[in-house]
Amino acid sequence: MFKKFFRSQASKILQMRLLTQTLIYVIVALALAGCDRKPKLGYDNGRSDGYAVGYNTTCQIRTTLIAGEWDNEEYSRGYRDGYAAGALDCTNSKRN
Image (cartoon, rainbow, N blue to C red; front, side, top):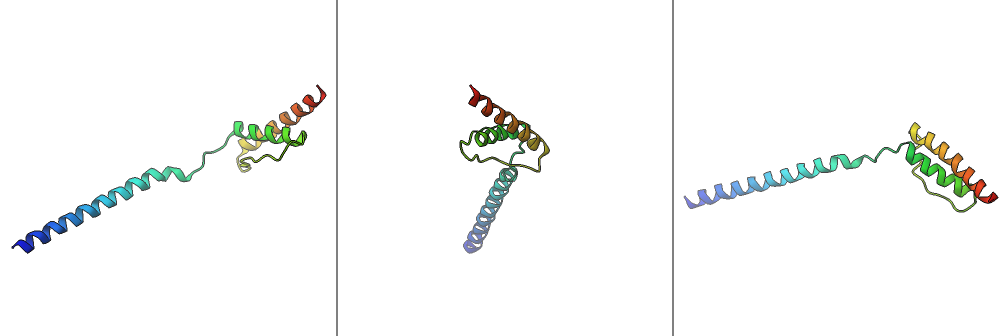
């Protein structure tokens, strides 16, 4: 009789442990589900990167690391605008 009781108790404990572990795995998976996507860069990010590259390249300061999300049209348009503005600012700063 005691063996049956302890066996059923042990079985319940194992079931609860399995249920708890499964619940933890599901919560962690849901929490991480949104973490695999990098944020989409837009015009402002492209303009900032382009400005830095345009200024630094024209003034021959240094190489600049950028995000370079070229498939994104907004980023690319911002990069082109920023590059032109950065290069112009460098040229104007050399004249003053």
